[in-house]
Length: 462
Image 1 (tube, rainbow, N blue to C red):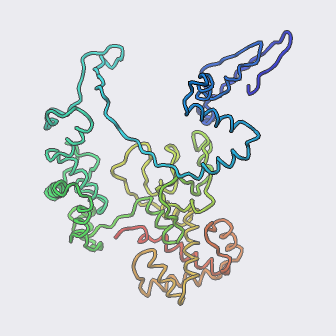
Image 2 (cartoon, rainbow, N blue to C red; image 1 turned 180 degrees about the vertical axis):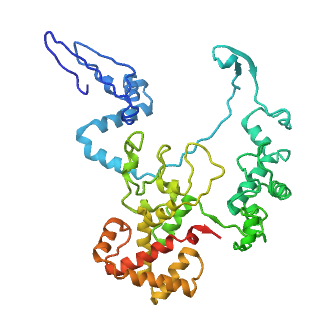
């Protein structure tokens, strides 16, 4: 109880213990399992020292002449903070403390003075330890450096030793995969006996050796790949070549791959001018269907307070993710679950993805943001539409494409004003002001923007 109950004479107490245990069809946010119940009965009020913080109580119980300067300062601070007559001054002090820059904390690992003894348990039973075991590497591989301690640091050095090319092969293969959509070794998560054979084993070995000899210089490998004639090839290919080599394992053409899910969202925000490029900070909660975080869709109710400022337009990297309820837009574009590490993403092409980029809440707000750029741009309608096309695809449109976009714009000018008003009411971006533009023009420019943001070319790397 917050306050002691005072009784007189003969007093009877009835205690009713309630325990809410989360589970199926229950509330996961109320898992109040009773661990220890205590009832205290006393003839007098509890000692006033019991309510003091432990460090303050320790300082108060110390003899006045033997208190350290730190204990005296702690006592004075507690007295000042708990004294009502100093409430105003205390509030001012707290405001000043809040302005003090906070340091950046980082965890560091330090070696222990004494090596911990590890034993093999008989049949995994902790109560039956057997002989002592030591850390080591598989016997069929080269041994750890003689004389070095059997520690994680030694193991890390062993991994990047020239006698261990697997680490370098694995890294250059993942870099190649990022540029071409598929690694030289397709099963980038498995380099063992059950893995697929590399399409170009000599190239993989050469890149690994080059990586090690360059001092593990990542920038050198990136520059080496992107400046190669192989990477700089054009993506288009004849039907016969695509039929012969659908995955481009022969590297006869440039890569053409859809960007990852997070980049799809970032492209929408960047091309529309809504992207908040702030780095670091907390996770954010962009718009999402509320029912996804409630029962029965979710195992238990979850809190998802949608951002009402520019935080809703931060990079997808900062989007908060529940392991059991990932962000739906990212799931539609094959983002992996956060429960396990993912080395290679499966890439799919589904009608749902087109519906997401066309109708999802942030996609609609991005379309309105791009429409705002079109309406505030200078020049003729054709010139403004051309620049919007370049923002989305990074190339200049031809005359036929401009004519198609102009047709969409002019047709949408006749949109019912009520529909245009509903468009603004439900999808207006929170960081821009569209009040200066007529509703028909907003609707027309938004229709064009939705077409541009929904182009396959907008979210595909050619």
